[in-house]
Image (tube, helix red, strand yellow):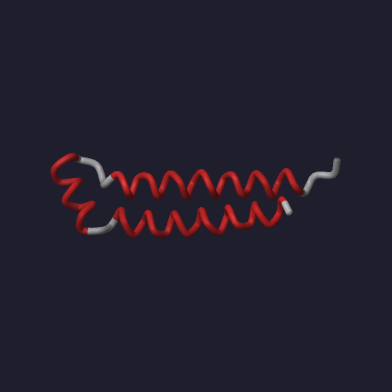
Length: 68
């Protein structure tokens, strides 16, 4: 069961990273960078969420493989 959750976290994290990259390169993010110097909050949150979910999934896979 733990492996299934870990795999789902990895897949979800990769999807969030993909959509975060798309949002980061969008027109609205470009406009935001012109006026504020940083991309939109949506792009940042998608990328951060993707990194956290992917790392949690990888950690879960590493810990579920250990024998008790």
